[in-house]
Length: 206
Image (cartoon, rainbow, N blue to C red):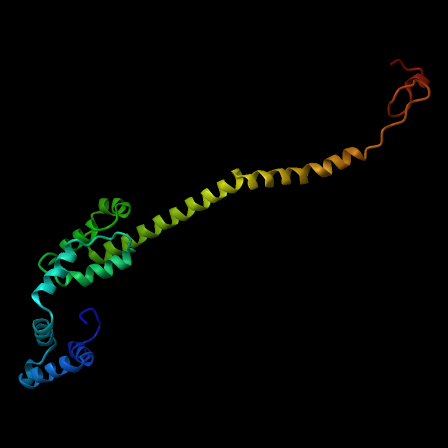
């Protein structure tokens, strides 16, 4: 609820609307026994955590946050998990600097190597830069895969066959033209094969 862009009164109403059965009856009892001016969103959060969120649960989520890394998640998925668990470790990431450093440390190495040298300590900007770096890496992988597939097609058996087929298509018309050239007849004057007027008949030397 804290992430929603609405008033604290709306957050309180929204949270209460999600309660069911025993939890709803608990809140009615809590509300009726509290002065109206103290029935606030902060009161609800504190009371609800005290009633339904035990210390062991909070500690487990805090440890989960401390061990959180991006791994196979996208940057967006990692960000969402980071923000969710960071609520249980407020003292660890109390400032913008601490939150940014821990988020950066959890990024995959191939992204961290692009992000770390910039030393970005605005959390929102850091996340956006990580998303851009992720997209750049994805594009590089796609291009490499296309190059590999192209190389396989050109160098494989079918690639060689395609090259031979292309060469045959080019050479076949050439052969046809050469085969259609008419061989000149043997000259009756000199007994040789030549084009044009016979030099012997005209008195020229061979």
